[in-house]
Length: 226
Image (cartoon, rainbow, N blue to C red; front, side):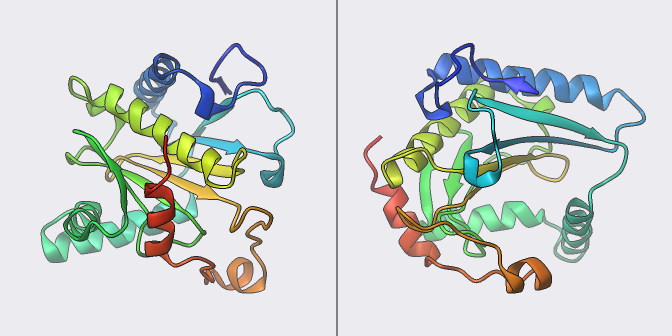
């Protein structure tokens, strides 16, 4: 478990930037340490927030799992990205990012190192992803200023979510490494008073019904005053 702050009731969106710097630094150090263990096949850095996700402890925190195997979804993503790379001679994630930055319709925020956007293939209402602009595979490859840029865009993202409907947003966050460094946010609210439930089509068939148009979600998130 990774405790984000010593303050029990502090929301991640309320943490100062300096505290997010410490969180990202810890993520980076643990990634490097766990990568040295030959038993570790995949490192998952993630956060579950809110009662709607099943969280019972309000203290701001996340978790780091070191798996002795590659999880199924990650394995499928690696396989698809590898095939794309062989055929197109380019990183799949770099191509997704290039298209989003070129169109700008779904881009929420950007700094020198990272771009936050609502993906065109979003599964959850107001889903966001944060991609490293420079192709890097993991936190261990950070150059000067990139860790701080990640902290900054993570904080602004959390502020947007908590201001979207006027209260803490229940969500899942997962940091993806190995192929192309990116962070994925899966919020569970589709409106101020309605949750996004994963019913039969989503849970049994893996086919997601989108409650909010990605472009409309991007406008709502982008126009928030943070």
